[in-house]
Amino acid sequence: MTTWQSTPGTAFYPGQGFPQQNPGYPPQEGHNSGYRPPYGENPPPYGESGPGFVPPPGAMPFVQPPLGPESGVGPNSAMYGSNYTEDSKRFNFDDRSIRNGFIRKVYSILICQLLITVSMISVFLYHRPTKLWVMHHPEIFWICFVATIVIIICLACCEDVRRKSPINFIFLFIFTLAESFMLATAASRFDSQEVLLAVGITAAVCLGLTLFAFQTKYDFTGCHSYLFVAMLVFLLFGIIAMIWQGRIMTLVYSSIGALLFSFYLVYDTQMMMNNHKYKISPEEYIFAALNIYIDVINIFIHILSIIGHENN
Image 1 (tube, one colour):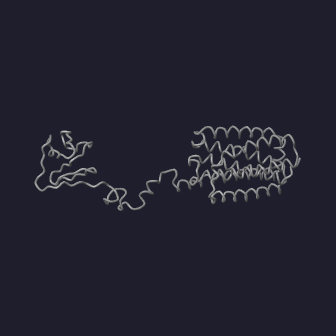
Image 2 (spheres, rainbow, N blue to C red):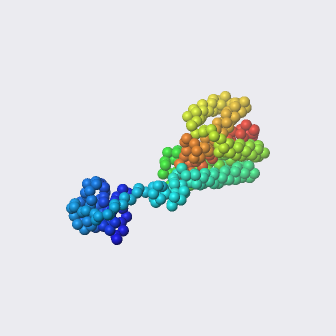
Image 3 (cartoon, rainbow, N blue to C red):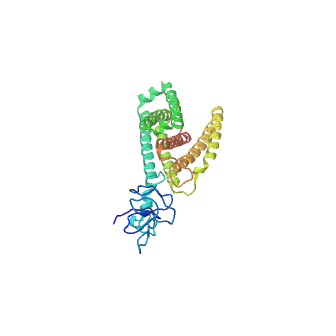
């Protein structure tokens, strides 16, 4: 007896070796006519063409049931186990394992950035020749400032730059060096004890906000419009603070800045998670690390401005 593997809904008679096909199915291999009988009619014998085949007396057609849980076969049946559906989602970007790996990669890059920044600040604070040399060459500060603006524009506007390796790591490394130099130059104008206190407060605030962002059920990713308007108002207030300078104006401006970038830190942290309305793609790990790094740096700058007194 010839063994056939028929499609769901087809019928065959034992001993004939040829399935009865419904309309729309192609002819079986070995059938030389290409003839497809109407639904309900018997197919011709194997190797012959045309209608007219009559099954032997007593032959009952066998209709193969559709694949599924009821049939006991197929990918949704019990023989494949209960983990088949979960395994089929293994390569989905929304899968928890991929999202957790993305978060680990982002924070690994962020830690490296912060280590570079802290190291450069320490050199500028405790190595007096370097501190004096930077003070006598202010043009390097402005070169780094222009470099950071250009790199941010490139990473924000060019998808290939921020996703293609190793150019994305090169751009991020250059940005980190330039930003660290600017921050170290600004921090060298303050007392070392004030800088260390600002670093400790920034670390505690950022850690608390990160834990809050991971634990809270409130979705901050839907507040991007409000944060954008708040940033525009903050920039306009910064222009006013540059005209009317004073200690009170500095305290107000820095307090608002620390609060605003604290919200941005929670927002950018939740953008990496999978259980919120808006989320960033796992391929954007460089851009995600850059956003959180900028939030941490701005929080540190504003806290240092609140507790510190700049030395002339």
